[in-house]
Image (cartoon, rainbow, N blue to C red; front, top):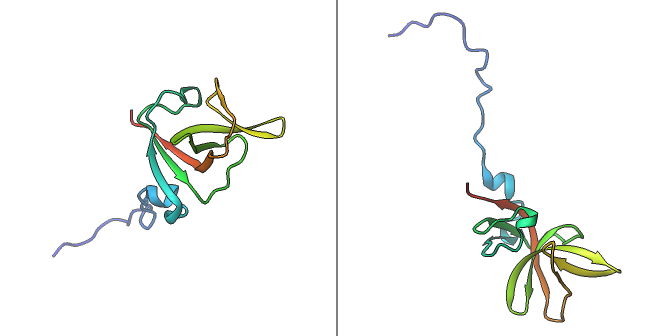
Length: 115
């Protein structure tokens, strides 16, 4: 039988809670998708090849947001901007003017990059 001596730790009861990435990053699990960036086209925005994009289909796209679009049968990550009251999608160098088949798949809510 051990005998307790001294005072209890002042930090007792304040133990650090672990970081839960699901709780931190995923607000609506049914509308969230992970996509891997395959190209170097968004380097100017800090999105590197093999970065994981957390795409939220429930979050409305807004000008200035990174979005994933489906354009000409491909998924592309671009920044949504307004030009002369029309929406365009850009990687910082080139612009895509939406065509009838262009659709915003979702808004990028986080970018996860391996070091």
